[in-house]
Length: 318
Image (cartoon, rainbow, N blue to C red):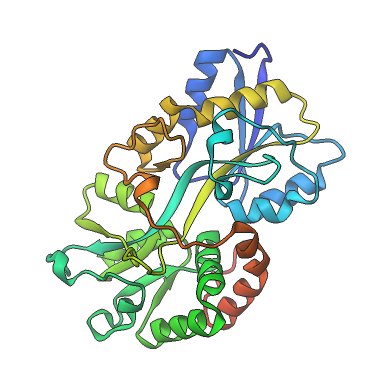
C-alpha cells in the first residue's frame, strides 16, 4: 500500500481505456491517479523533452519496440518487479527499465458472414495472397506500431527478400489498409472484408460487441513462421516525483488479479503465469515468431520507411 497521494501517468495506450484499472488502484491505495493521454508515437518524445523536470511518474503504452528504442536515453528508472523476474527475456527490458503487462499476439480476424466454414479460413499469412482472398484482406497502416513490428519480425526471421515479396503479393492481391487496428476491425463487416490482420484483443472486443467474427491463428505449424507478439508496457520515469507510488502501480498492474481482469474485460493475453486467461489463448500456447526484440527494434525505422514507400502511409493528422 502506498501513502503518496498522487500518481501521474502518461498513456500512449488509449484503447481500450484503462480507466477501470486506475480507479481500482485508487480505491485500494488511496492514491489519486492523473492520466494524460498522448498519441503513442509521440509519448516517448514528450518524456525526452521533460527529462530535466519530469511531470509523469509512469509511462503506459502499447509498444515494446518504441520503448526499447528510447531506453538508451535514460528516461526510465529500472524496476525489477517480482513478477517480471519470471518473465521470458522478450517480455522485459534487459535492465528491467520497461516491463510488459499484457501481450498482443497478431491474428486473422474472420468475417463469418463471408467465411462461415472454418475449413476455408487461412492458416498462413501467405494464404492471404491467394485468389480466395482477393480484395478481401485488410490491415492497419504504419500509424500502428504493431504493423511495423510484425514486418520487422518477419524480416528478422526470414530475411528481406521473403518479407518484402510477401508484402508485394498481398498488395497485388488487393490488400486494403486502414488508419488503425480499431478502424481495421470496424471495417471488416461494414466494408465486406473477409479477413483483418489485427491483435487478438481486437477480435475479443469486437466479438463481445456482437459482431459475427472468428479468430484464425496463422503460421502455427511446427517449423512455421509463428505469429508476431508485441505487448503493452509500463515503465517508471527516471526521477519521478512519486516513485514509490509508481512502483506500487507497476506491481498492481502485473498482479495475477489485474491480469485476469484485463483478459476478462478486453481479451488481452496475460503475461503473469498465475493469471487466468479464460477464453483468451494463453501465452504458452502461442508459437511466437522466434526473433529477439533487439533485432526488431534495430529494423524498426527501415521497415517503416519501406512500408511507407509501398503505400502504408497513414492519413495526415491535424
